[in-house]
Image (cartoon, rainbow, N blue to C red; front, side):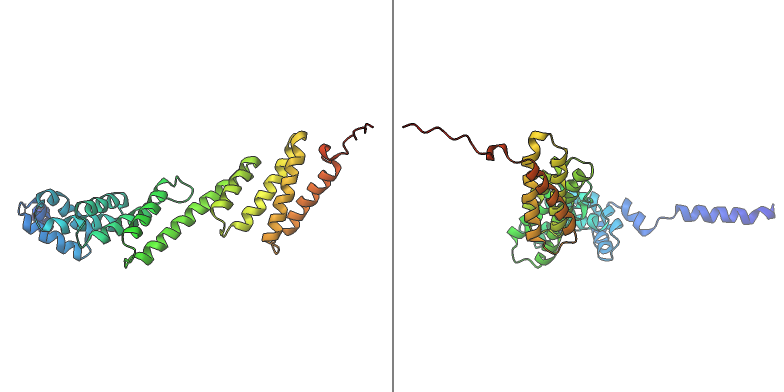
Length: 281
């Protein structure tokens, strides 16, 4: 029997440890609203957002109508943001701003709503609906708080989101070219150039539009070729005027020469000398 005593003692100690409640676990079971609220605020201010959020969520309905409710809801939204729950935090910040429009936290709540949407914006390859929503929310914030201390960061976020949409539009047009949907590529590059005239990808977009038009003309049925090669000439002239030092200049010139040769060999039938009308005396 004595040989088994150490094992029994270890088992009893383990059960005692498992049965003991930490202060945090006691708070979760506590019915004292004030005690739980004060602890949640303390956890939040210490940066322990998981514990703060867990304590605050069931407290918020119990604090309705009390002065503490405002801070509790703002801290709850902020804790969700710090945990990376951006979809939830964007919702909670928006709800807070609508519920407490005169709160000293209202401006920051709207900023954090926009910032949550910014953080939740997906990579450019994915659907960008949420990115557009984020940009709209940022603009709404700037319209409401034009002198905000958050303005520089907000503008930087907007610029980054705009660049993401720009990259997506460029890559989509580029993909049409890659898979040989040349007509769609030309349309996409035209739209891209109109939407992003100062784009970092402007030169590449202009060259690929020219290349797409060139391939489209070559593959077209005979009755459409002349018109489409005329477009090649126009695109080439725009390209060399805008990017005279382009590394793609030789390739562009080769396409231009090909188009000019075709046009010379296939003159416009309408340009032929029209039969003269016999004069009558």
